[in-house]
Image 1 (cartoon, rainbow over the protein chains, first blue to last red):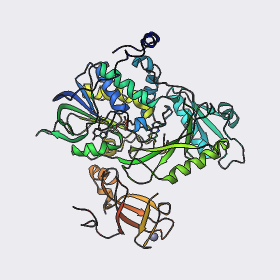
Image 2: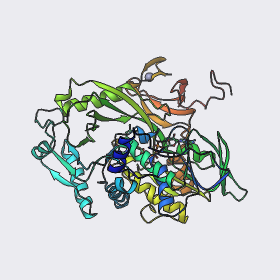
Image 3: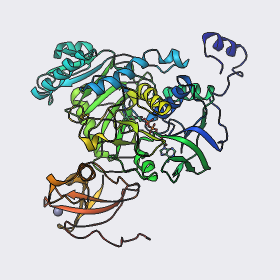
Image 4: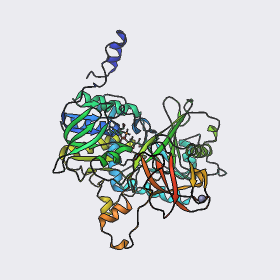
Length: 417
Length: 98
Ligand SMILES: Cc1cc2nc3c(=O)[nH]c(=O)nc-3n(C[C@H](O)[C@H](O)[C@H](O)COP(=O)(O)OP(=O)(O)OC[C@H]3O[C@@H](n4cnc5c(N)ncnc54)[C@H](O)[C@@H]3O)c2cc1C
Ligand SMILES: [Zn+2]
């Protein structure tokens, strides 16, 4: 792998940019690997990267039914934060946040992590109580989060409407300054390049259609649209399709898949300096470096794999955005799209061994897993390499739905992000 | 937005009048306190989440307010049929080959 640097740019500029090499190779699948990862989203690629870079396991294939990063990784609104309520969540999301800082250097790839601050608005007494509880809980866990008055919120984000006459008046806000955004595609591409350089095979247009198990129940490999590929360890990291693949192995999951939508406006000059979220009015917004307003909407109310979503969901979100930011009422929206998110009953992910020997699953990130990509890949690689979870992901089992040891962020963070 | 036929009102109405109420034909045990942890997990948390035909409950919230069942394809979101609560799971689906 040739390193990207200012010298490389200068060198290539001199010779007409003819010397850039492909960022990752596209090999033919081998008959057998040590580890197969199903799904080349950010989480799957990060897992492969850390298997190779931390654990020295390089005989790895990442199988992707479409193109890499074409799932939720390329469809999300890229909000990064770690101000979750419970200790277990704080552990995993802040592990990820620490890895975001420095990820561009580690991967030699600009993932454009920008700690511009995530501000969550309170509109009523209940919001104040919930958000202040988060501020205190976060601080006890060593995670930055601070309380702002409406005036301080407006100072931090000038276009915000804090008029008392607003339909949903802003009565305060919680701010995590280390929160922010990153460039979603670059995250997938950077991990893919790093993994490929260490020998990992990334095989696109290769859909997993079955999971093969031996008489003793252990995994022996997967059936794919490009034939059978063997492996004694298989990690399923397929977001909205995780339960479909787990079903192939005979494991029923506590998951439901819903469409989640987002949309972007025409590009304008810098106007929103941070990320603003409101759980109560159910909307959130930031501005991309291209200048588009990036707006996240909610999920549809029914299970679906359609990768679209109802128009009324977007309308509802835009109503709320226009109340919070009256200056945007005449902006034009350019594109909208949907992704299929896998939601667990307690809204926390599952990163665990499964009842099937050799089968591991990393799923249930639902509406908010982009932020966790580096941390999730890091601890999931550990789980696969050692056949034992990392202390950080040890609580995120499938069995918690039988034992009742839930990590109930549902009430804590009911909105999409 | 979906158009949903309420089997009580016998009319197709916009989705906004309805509330989805999750997977259908999951029976609650008559002796819920006596359920094993395994069975309770299956009843409470495990869902089939099919990519294809789903049997699900809907409630005509802003109409007759009654619960009913529907059969829908989760890939196209097309409804195959709706039927009243308490009616058995349909053995044969209209327009389906199997
Ligand atoms: C509109 C929207 C907005 C969001 N906003 C945010 C946000 O602001 N912040 C945040 O933290 N999170 C957000 N999320 C959630 C986040 O995108 C996901 O949690 C995260 O991307 C999941 O990562 P992944 O790598 O597991 O999934 P994906 O990128 O979806 O990767 C899974 C891959 O598996 C592949 N696959 C599926 N079935 C098979 C098969 N049979 N064989 C082979 N491959 C298969 C898919 O094609 C896909 O590429 C948002 C999601 C959406 C849809
Ligand atoms: Zn009705």
